[in-house]
Image (tube, rainbow, N blue to C red; front, side, top):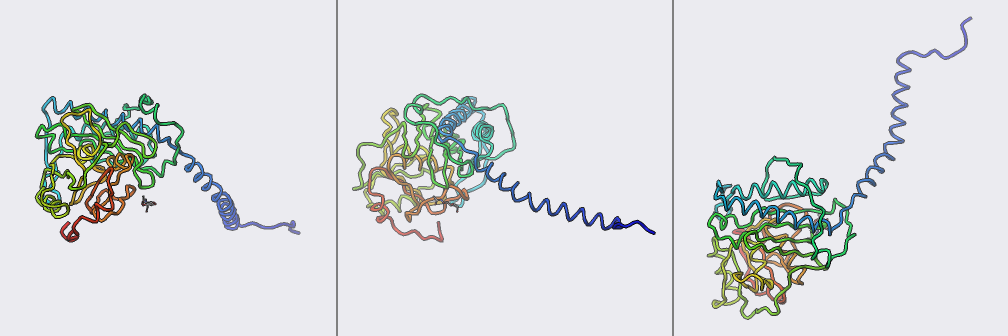
Length: 342
Ligand SMILES: *[C@@H]1O[C@H](CO)[C@@H](O)[C@H](O)[C@H]1NC(C)=O
């Protein structure tokens, strides 16, 4: 008589085991992935730390910008032409500054998204944050302003006004860092390596710059780009009248500073409104918008739309920036642009 029992074939055992693994996986995978999500969500960053880091990055990049200019070894080359035919330059100043600024950001907060105007593969783990909170920031801003890392987008411009940099028109040159929260600029730093000035702002918390006491709209003094300014001049005269004073300048960072109270800097231009009618990249304007918003001003497309700083780098709607005036009234004066052309 054969003993009682279940005879297991090897195939049966294999199928049974696989089923078992499947059931266990099913039971635990859900738990595991929600734990992981919760762990990710708990990753926070203090905005005051990010502000201090942004200032440090802008200053560090600025040192490279200055060094390359002083050594007179720019190695400039063209990155190609913009849609408007302007030559886009890249120099060693842009590149060295990018390497410092980008690596400093990445090494300090590896999970934060960082968009830089320049791109290269040099990884330098030795560049680390001092963790120093500058006195003026510590005085005006309280710590503990934690936000989830995934809501943050950082925009870096390692050298704004490269054309002017090569021409030795150095007051226009800036390095910039911007922090956007869910696409909205909250922290902005604009540093002028050749004057040593660093402007910073934390929207609705504090800044080390302030608006001027008065601005004119009848007519405004309008600041525009000094390269390919033909069309924008016609646009400005069309909007505010033919006698409207126009200042031509280099660099989006510089143009934003010209709207503020820069009494410490003698050879800064002063303007009431900043207008740009062609495409512009978000690392050129994000820090400026943070500063302007912190002053109670506005920076929008020519149609008055908000610019979202959590998506693609290109802003196609032009821009108009103002502080201390009725921005809506300003927008209403602007002529309609042929959207095909721009
Ligand atoms: C920007 O776009 C993202 C993704 O679509 C959205 O979540 C965010 O609220 C937008 N931010 C602003 C300021 O419009």
